[in-house]
Structure formats: structure tokens, C-alpha cells
Amino acid sequence: MAQRFPDGFFWGGATAANQLEGAWNIDGRGPSVDDHLTGGTYDRAREITVDIRPDMLYPNHDGIDFYHRYEEDIALFAEMGFTMFRMSISWSRIFPNGDDKTPNESGLAFYDRVFDCLRAHNIEPMVTLSHYEMPYHLVETYNGWASRELIGFFERYCATVFDRYQDKVRYWLTFNEINCGTVPFGDMLETGLMQGFEGSASDLENSLQNRYQALHHQFVAAGRVTRLAHERYPQFKIGNMDCFILSYPATCDPTDIMLNQQAMRKMNWFCSDIQVRGAYPSYAARFFEENDIALVIKDGDLDDITDGKVDFYTFSYYMSNIVGVHKLEQIPGNLTQGGKNPYLKATDWGWQIDSEGLRFSLNEIYDRYQIPLMVVENGMGAYDTVEEDGSIHDQYRIDYLRSHVRAMREAVADGVDLIGYTWWGPIDLVSAGTGEMRKRYGFIHVDKYDDGSGTYERRRKDSFFAYQKIIASNGADI
Ligand code: BG6
Image (tube, rainbow, N blue to C red):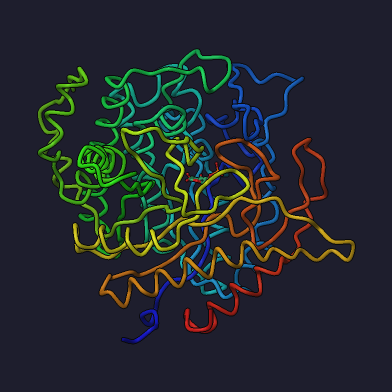
């Protein structure tokens, strides 16, 4: 069996505006959700404040200053050989309050410059329309996606950027990790359900009723903008984006098998079943009934969802965990907790490394949907050491990268229609979960630290050259 990736396979990296741009209040940008989050750590959740306090540090305010350094960063991506760069547009750079009638021209012009720069380097942009942020005004006034009115605001924002960038961007994703709106902390980042809340993010509570209603509004919004894109811009490809948290049954006890099926449906299949197939899945009714969820569904909503079927499926993949009814040691994860798998090692932040699980997931997803797939986030957060001569020997990251690329190559040989791979955080950026800088994902080191200090200087790590080699050989030389 040929051990190669298809010609034209996209290799690149993925980022989110709020985690790298900085310039949070420059050129007319309004504050977004993340601007109200302080830095946390592995075991201390981020704080949410309603007002921006001068005595607190908000790491997203400055990010890694991509706003002023994008040319240098994109040149480094090009040097690695990127053919795709996944980024998001900051909604509050375009509509500072979210419900404004007209867009902010300076914000639109910034992304023109970024897309032009990418195209000059032959890098295809892929844009996430909403990556864990929304204008904070929408939280204050509407409690985020709890309100139906958000649908119209989001449509206006998408129509604006579709029209503006129609000749520069072909690949679009609606909501980053839309399924994370169903879990604590994710509901805040994803759906903005935090009106008036102040305190530790771990104390924020939202009922399942609120989370699933907000999610319903997002499905309708995603459906409507996908339909609009298909009607007006035939060159566009629109994808969903799910956080795929693979789980295995902890034992062969049939109760564990059943529990795992339910966990997989709830976490991994529910949202994509809707966005790929265009309808709520058959198992939703029982889940809603048993959890006292009564959705308000208006006339036309289900048609919007049906019309909004995506062209390709994308997901993030970092880790796996186990579920079962017998006693399990819990281990932290990507917005969720899971059971510890004795056969796997974990990162410095406790995320269990499972490259074989990526091949398994790709096969499962492709068997289920049979549309093109892209892995749009994969990576490891780790402590890095800068040696005296400035070099950074991150062999652990290279090992992680290689094992996951090998797993994808196996999946392609298994018959999966995989069209691209964008590593999460090709350049160090602010962690979404903890707000830390020291949780580093990059192939490029950024001289920026958790106390806000640093020169922002960029430096190539050993992994930079490892990825460059992988890309140059289209995944043959791992
Ligand atoms: C994904 C998000 O969940 O994981 C990213 O889409 C995030 O925004 C990434 O940064 C890694 O998580 P963290 O918490 O380590 O930054």
C-alpha cells in the first residue's frame, strides 16, 4: 500500500485571532470575551472580570503581537513550507459591538493585508468565523448565544467578510469546536453564556437547557451562512469544526461499552451529525427528554439546518481518554476530564498522547460521513528550554508530530479522504484553557512570558526543521 499523502495535500498551522493578534483595543476593535479573562495555570482557573482592571493581567490583550508582526510570522511559515494557514477573524475587529449596523473599515483592511501576504507566499488561508470569542457587548446585552438575536448579528458579520474577501479566501469554518458549547468553560468561550459573571471561570455554571438552546441558535446561524455562501460564492468550501475527544471503554464490561457509545455520541457525534447530515440525530430526543431540555425551535429553523450541510468535516485532535463505571483515575484534558489510560503517556499538562487514536478517529469519522476530512488542530503544549546559544531542542514535540503524521498516513492508506493538516499553534501563543504562554505549542518560539515580560523575538526550534522536512517530502520523510 502506498505510504504517501495525496498530491495537493494542505500542510500548515492553525491559530485563533484572540490568542495571537494582541492589539485588543487598536484601530477601532471592540473588546471580546477573552479580553475579560486573566491568566490561570494548570490547577488555577482563569478569572473573569466584567470590567478591565488595571491591577490584573489579561494575556490576550497583547497576545504575541501578530497584529504588528504578521509579515515576519508568515515569512517563517512560508520557510517551513506551509501551503495552508488556518486563522480566525476577530468578530469585534469588524463589528466592535457585534450589533453595529456598519463594519469597522480598519479591521477589514487589516485582514486584507494578512490575506494578501499569505497569497504572496502561496499559502491558502482557511478562516474560522468564530473561534472562542465574540464582542463582549453581545455578552453584556444579550447573554451571548442564549439570545436568538445573535443569529442576525452573525449573519451580518459573515455576509460582510464573505463579500469583502471573496477573491482571497476559499475555505471557511463556522464555529470552532462547536461541541465544546455543551461542556463547562467551553460554554463560556463558545457561546458567551456569562452575562454579568465575575469570578473564577471554574465557578461559572450554565444549565444544559441554556447550553443546548444556545447551540441550537448556532446551528441555525451556521446553516444560514453556509446556505448564503453556497448560493453566492460557488468557489467557497464551508466546513464544521469539532473538538474530537476520542474515548475508549475502560473495560470489556458491556456497561462500559454502552457508556462509551453514549459519551462518543454526546461529545463527538452530536454536533457533526447535525452539521454534516443536516438534521438532529435520532438519539437526540431521548437525551433531551432525560435531561429536561426543551428546545425552542422556530418555523424554518430545521430547514436552515438542512440547507446548511457542510462541504467538509474538520476537527481538532489532541488526546484520548477512557470511560467506565469502575473506579478510574481522572486526568485533565482539553476542556474535559477523562479516565487515565495506563497504556498512554501524557503531556506536561496531563493530556494523554495517543497517535494511534488519530488513525482510529479518522477511520471512524470517514466511515460515518464519507466527505473530505481535515485535521485542523493537533499539537502538544510543553515547557521549552531556551539554551544559552538560543537553540531550543524540543525532541518531545518532534516525536509527537511524527507519530501523528504517521497515523494520518496510515489512515490515508486505509482509504480516508484526508485533505489537510494544520498543527495547532505553529508559533507559541496564549493558551485558551489556562491563558499561559509557558504552555508552548510552537515550532517558533516567542520571547513572551506569563508576567507580561518579553521582547516578542521569534526563534526557530528544532521542530521547525523537522516539520519543514515532512512538508518538503509531502509526508514521506518522517
Ligand atoms: C483547542 C482550541 O481546544 O485547543 C484552541 O481550539 C486551543 O483555541 C487548543 O488553544 C489548545 O488548548 P490550550 O488550552 O492548551 O490552549
